[in-house]
Image (cartoon, rainbow, N blue to C red):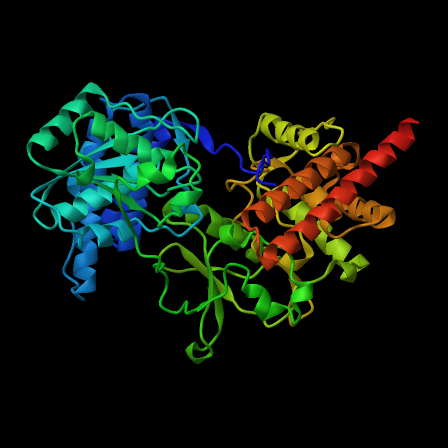
Length: 555
């Protein structure tokens, strides 16, 4: 299993208009000027970091003025946090002075942007890096090296935290290149000069990023580039999101190389709303909703969004879920608000630190065996609603089709699959029975409806047929139920999906098979591995049946 070559994560880089990104940053700053809060300032920081990163990848020299803006916003955010922690109401940063420099920034027609996963999916708060940097014993000078993408924003906060202590701090950002397990870093001439100046000043050096990931090679590449530029290894410090198991890192000779440098992880205590007290993430929500572990649906628990429950003493019990910091969470919240307003879900409420909360309903998720005509109608109505509410522009499904073909070949199936694009949407992506709850009024409600349609897993933006196929597969519809479901969808939309549904059923099923196999491999030795393997066997059996039926029809 360790040699799995399957595709489940999609490429998250996209082409974006530099003009639109700059306009979004300006709007965030204007909002912060009119109604200052840590939330609005954090949103502006994330926008600035994203924009700076895109410009740095495109034109390192032009990125310097963007870097200055990000640094100033990071400084204002930290100053505001310090005042807030002292319960003072008198702090009001001079954000108006930032508007003119932002408006004067050069505009790039197109930039390549990737979503910082920690901010969007895993509740990594940039201020956690400030907490670490405020405590470490640095000398009078520090050079921070941020690893792009997310390291752009993290390095600005790290440097601002050190400056708040009266220590001189500079920062640069780098983009490691090459194979994921063997990254390399090359400094620009200007960056080499900055490193040389810092060496002469006896500075410390901090490499800042979210990882390390599977290999650790990005951190190692940055540190070894510093060494080549004359920095002693003992002056180089890694600031990471977690402490790695260095023996498991995949980079060549990783453990030996890693031990040459000091690594300080940020706190694993998540910043969250004060009412979010009982952890129910990592699959623990199943203990609350299902009486027997034998009924638990399989889950890749280490990649679940964080979830908490309020205590009974706090009045109405609410479930808190991490939706994303700043604009990454805003889009999730808005989708779930639309779903709730249409009567298909629980109304969300915005909370602090990227969390959203919902009323906690004491009920059980539905099993596939409960499928009835009433449920079929509700599923069809929901898909028809998403088709109306979440339409987007999309030109092709090449990446999704290639994913399906690759995984089919790797898993020993006929790789022929065609995905026709007719109604592109942000899909729900989670049509499994356990994602539906029966309310006290016997109304079927969809949960987790905004997070997965464009996250770092496939499918990404796709045709509504992906959700139709997901419902058919996950509810284990027989031929009669499938026909009734698609007929009800046809009645609600005027669209007959029968002509293209088979390709989506095949693509959906092989994606879920690959997902479960990858998750089981990642969770070797746990009870969850067995659940994931059982789920994988179900998807494999479904694909085998499809292939047999196709061969019989041809024969």
